[in-house]
Length: 437
Image 1 (cartoon, rainbow, N blue to C red):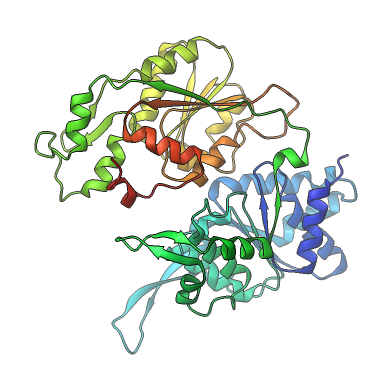
Image 2: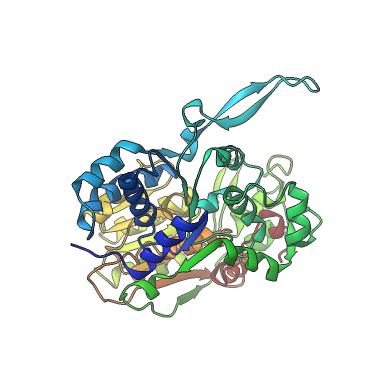
């Protein structure tokens, strides 16, 4: 029998009092907090239905957490059965739909909205991994903001709310408090101080953004909640780029030589691929620049027999790392858009001893705590995806072996600058890559 921790009891009390954001870091047991609140509400009759909206990869985790409710002191099998009956769990993708809007003042067009089965009063609506609402113009953000008015209580969960790009707070806080900003322009005037040439925010009224974030949410870090193994200092390993002339040639935009059509993707997309591990996708295929990174990765794998997690941004790098692991006598499994949703469990169960994951697919809602070491083969422009990826091996576990993060950085390239920003917790949007030298 387990007892709810102090940070979980605090969260439950906050949910009783108000609509709230749980800015709880991954692996702090935050999903149990609204489930406990719902279980109590079922008992006293205040909660008769509940909706959970989450990434598709998190649905199983929510279902498993409901199964675990009887393991906690004060809850039993009846609570579990009632939760399974009244809690509706859906993914971001299945929550929304498109319909024709035949307005009188404009031509018919398709408009996003929640599906019909969700358009009803809810006693509580929970949005998990709410940083997915960071793009305020996205279909999923617009659909979820529409459901807010149907909810008697609203809760959002994420450990990475904004990545210091405070425009990402709009959708999350607007869901909690639909009356907060009557117009988007009101938010912009309050939070955004300056934009660049591409209209992207580059300076913020940071004090006000943090004030709002603190007002609407509460925080918990994993190390504050449980007795966790320590995290070793970042192990940054610099490697050299062998084909410097080719790299510099591409950096200057020599499109003709490399069969790259500047009209078919733009400079940002090209540089985004150039800076990552030296492979450049062209009309003729993928040009792979020789670096010492492949050797560095192989040396690291050969130097240990422990399970390893490797994160990459692009498919070419995922395939490359998997081949290197195989050549080193390991049994890798890849986890990206081509993989089954639950292929990561093949690593956790011990069927494979290396997992090579894509940031976007593998950084959320999965446990990779069989490993103590995460290798970052290349950077990502999203500081949120990076922070989430770092936490995959940090789930509560019996081992007290320190966890470590290894970064393989190609010296003297844009990749190094992107790694520096990523490790510092800063996003690097595509528009910024055009101006980085």
